[in-house]
Length: 99
Length: 231
Image 1 (cartoon, rainbow over the protein chains, first blue to last red):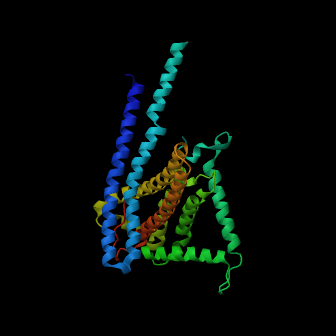
Image 2 (cartoon, helix red, strand yellow):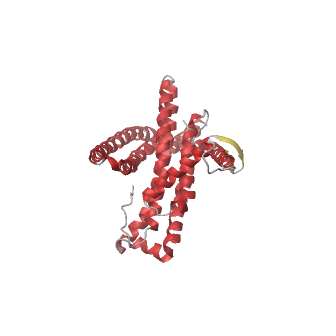
Image 3 (cartoon, rainbow over the protein chains, first blue to last red):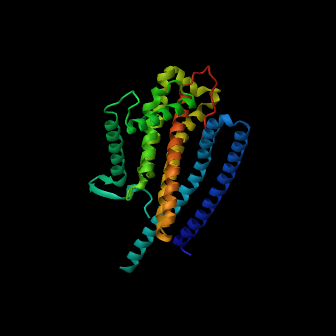
């Protein structure tokens, strides 16, 4: 198999793995964070403003790791530099062979 | 499939490209500035105020109370910076209800620019609060061994701010674009509502994180240093 096929296979497989792992771990972490927040709110309802704000900041931190995985997946699918250069090289080789 | 509004170019002259990001950013700025100028032309302090003035007062007092909750002693000193950050990112997310509009914060250029503003503003506020020597000494807290890690954390915090906002806004736009081509119209509408919610949350997060970084930079060495989120 030529380089173009290898690049495509590697990109597709890694996109799936990246998105898969990138959604599992942050989901577990956010579930833990929300459950601890709920028990804290049950114990001290009058501190709910501080607790809720801290929860949101913490969730945004955890979410950002998921976003990193998503951005890498999008780059691999839509703006893949290896695929683009390999495609350009294959196009030039085909043009040179065709002349 | 277009990743960012940078790719949609309206007009080009040599090196300068007028792309959708610039157009929508300037449109947002025009709406915010003109709207604020029109509403604050005649401010009254009695009970007979217009509803627009009431709305702006609610927004400003909410931002001031949030800044004070984060730990900054004089919220009005930082209101001009943090309030502008929040209003720009929130307006950029809210305007997605207008068809044909793409949020300029869905482009990595805009979010990097906002994160660079925070990167520059934090030392400026720190120096004006603690003096140059006091601020530089804060890099040696808690021990001088932490100096390289503190410097690295400045850079990674900025990068995280930029990528977090970009990823959230870009993913919202992309999900809607993908769903529009596969499913009936009700699902993209639901995703647009979800995109509105995440846009407002991300605006709040951006502002609160900037406020926390500024609070950590202006806190005097005698007070206890808070734990600064560092992802």
